[in-house]
Amino acid sequence: MHENSRGCTIILVEMRTLPVQIIVSFKKITNMIKGIGIAALIFGTLFLYVKEVPYFTNTFEINHLFFRALGFGAVIGAILGWLQARQSTDSLEKTQWFLICIVGLALAMPPLASFINHNFASSEKSKLSVQFLNQKALRTNRFGVGRHERAAAVATADAGVDFFYTTFLWKNESQRVRSPKRLFPIEITSGTAVELPVQKGFFGFSFVETH
Image (cartoon, rainbow, N blue to C red):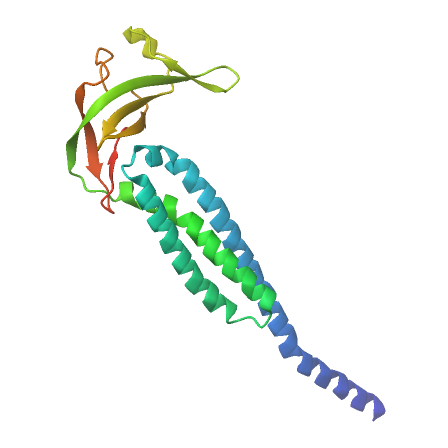
């Protein structure tokens, strides 16, 4: 009888601790999913920045797009951080989630906005009148260190060039775009009026399509 009573007691204790074990396991799974999500956000943001650098250079008024997207990301991050913080009773954990969401989404939004701007752009292309200043070639030496060099005055000089930087005046401000090929003939001199092929982006920010 004593053995049966002891066995029943053990079973009752295990049944009482079962919900606690389930909750603990659920929290572990939830934290793991959150960790994967944060890692994906970090690596995804880095990937987008690397991919979008040429479009940052080739988008007109990119600073406006960048800071608007930064602010939008911060607001969305604050809302998500607040929703996530409500689920925690620890003040330190609440602060951490606020910072992770605000900073993470604020940094992720600019390259994402750039990506959307040119990938979902209007199919219509137009010409933008600008004042040509110069065109420089960038070659890479065998050690992988880049150095700027002026393009030689012969067509064969373009061989081995990684890309070109074309500088021009637009709205009385100096602008520069990057392209894998020469945008204008080598004979064009500084101060000449030229036309750039531009495309209007999804958010209204035009860019020079050079790919």
